[in-house]
Image 1 (cartoon, rainbow, N blue to C red):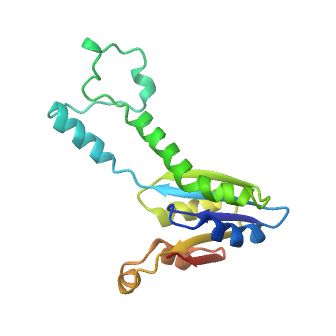
Image 2: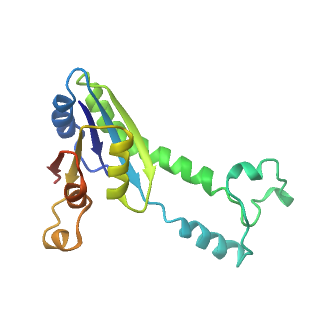
Length: 173
């Protein structure tokens, strides 16, 4: 069985490994996923604060800026280094949030791989990744925030409501 564990870094790796490992079984594996929301407007706002209002530019990736000289060696205005910064940030979050669970699973001889995706909608992204990774079950934590959780809808609640797959909801805290 293939298991998807969605974590925000607050799940106890040993508790998750104790549940997800046996679910995966000897032939299966576990994909450990974290979804990170990056407020891209923040990067633009910070540049505006530092360099002032700028004319919008049409750049689709950092590769378009390779070999661009900058006077005085400073980062040019409107430098779209966001791709590299965000890629590094995502990799850091993958290591920070998924590595402990992957390590705990590995200690139980369960095959596990960590993944990270950027998204503004964690529930939607988890469900999309479950489909792309062709998993059989989703394991996610619930923080149990009380009345507001039912009113506003936690990520776990949204996944339970929308998933066509079985969902194991583990209480955190």
